[in-house]
Structure formats: structure tokens, C-alpha cells
Length: 325
Ligand code: HSE
Image 1 (cartoon, helix red, strand yellow):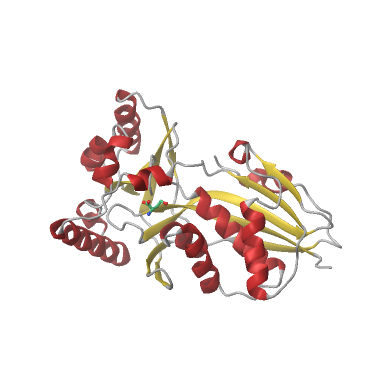
Image 2 (image 1 turned 135 degrees about the vertical axis):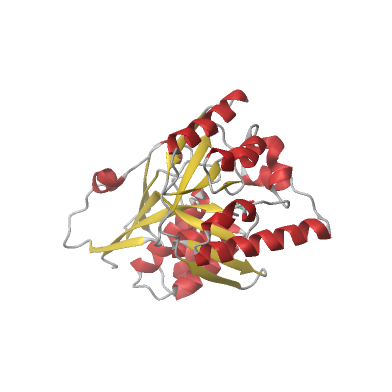
């Protein structure tokens, strides 16, 4: 019998950062927790409203992803006790599904002694999610630049600049990634492609070198945001005007509807920027919540316990001091 009990805390993520569609991601300080142990019979404790309606049987994503890890490692562990809580809002562009996939992969791997490398878990996560941007940020933390050809994902991690802060405005409505991807054209013009190659390259260089003053120009995009604008009323005004209200730059977070502003720690009027985001959305009839979410510099934090010796503490009691949202 496997006696381990594993608790994994996984960061949320923002993808694209404007021009880096399906390529750039950054981990944010908002989290999901997954707890796994071997059991006599599979059982679930899913806490919080984010988990409402999720299956509590072997069709559950966490269960299925854990079994992929065991298969890959040649280990049999068919019955699991699974607990999960997430403070990452669903279908808002903050990587909730990526964090669940990463939580399951990392927890299952730790449960069997960590036979799979982080890179292997990244490959599996990319395949499951269909693009590497959110999962890369959740696995490695920081800013992750990645490219996937359908078989192999390669990446470089950049540590977020110490003065880089992020403000998100999370609209009260959900937007399915599938719907937001469906709004995109099948083909783009050469001039738009060149526009994005330039901006995305400049953004990566600016983030890596700390030339934060270039971010406003570098976050511009022509590949996805213009096509998604109709799904997020107020978005275009925010992207056009955020720098005039003190942001370094602004983008749609992932597939949306959350909007993210990059802000320097030196910004003199952070409250004014926050008001601008909220009022612009409100004028379009959209209620939203703003959160200052520092970039998260690290990937999942893993706790491994001996379940035979250490008493099980319910997941919510264990993490209640850490929940921010
Ligand atoms: N790169 C993805 C997109 C992120 O923009 O559709 C959301 O999953």
C-alpha cells in the first residue's frame, strides 16, 4: 500500500500577455490545491463553488490525469482519495483548467515518488490543454516563453522584474475558451503576423532585460484581441487607454474575459487605474472585481506526508490561512 499523502498548491496564470498568443504565460498569486492519497475506494472532497457540478467518480479530470501519470510510470494505483479547492475563478481567463491539470499531474507524480521529470509533466500538460502557455506558467512559475509543434514543447523561464505588478479586472460573467477561440480567423495577413512577431519579441526582450517602459508598445496585438473584443464590452477602451491611466500596458488575460494591466511598483495612482478599469466596464453594464495579483515566481509547492503516521487534516482546515480570494 502506498502510504503517502500529497498536497500540491498550484498558481493561476495569465496567457498571451497581448501579442504572444498560445506562447507567453505568467504565473499569478492565486491558487488551486489538490490533495491525493491511495485509498480502498475512490472518494472525492471537492470544496467551494468552483467545484459545483464536477463529477465525483472516475470520470473526474483530476482522477483521469492522475491515472495518466501512473500509466506513464508503470504504476498501478486505481483507487484514490482526492480533495480539491480552487480560488481561481472558472472560465475567466486565469488558467483554472490548466492549474487543475498541473495540480493532478504534479500530485500524482509526487505520490509515486516523482519518477517523471518536470519537463515530462509539461509535455503531458501541454498535450492535455492543447497549448503550452497557461500550463507552462503553472508548472514552472514566473514568465514562461514556450513553443509547441504538436509533439514537443520547449520553453524558457524569465523571472518577473521586481517592480512588475499586475492588476486584474475580472468580469462577473464567464467566457468559455472554446467560444473565444471560435471567434478567431483561420488565416491572418502577413502584415498582422509581422506586427505580432515584432511586438511579442520586443515584449520578451523587455521583460527579460527589465526595460519596462517598452511594455506599452510591446503588448499590442493583432492576432486575437481585436476578434475577441465583441465578446468583452469595454475591452477595447481599456486596452487603448490603460497606459494613459498609469499602466505600463494592458491585455486580455488568456481567452478572457479578465483584463490584466501590467503596472510598475512606482505607479503614482494605482487607485485611479483601478477605478478606470471598473468604470469602463460598468459603462458597458459589466460588473467586475479587481485584484492586485503579484506575479508568482515559483511553480507548485508540494507537501508529502506519511499517511500512516500523520493524521489527515481536512484540506480546508489545512489551507484556510493561505486563501486570498
Ligand atoms: N492562448 C489561449 C487562448 C489561452 O488565448 O485561447 C486560453 O486558454
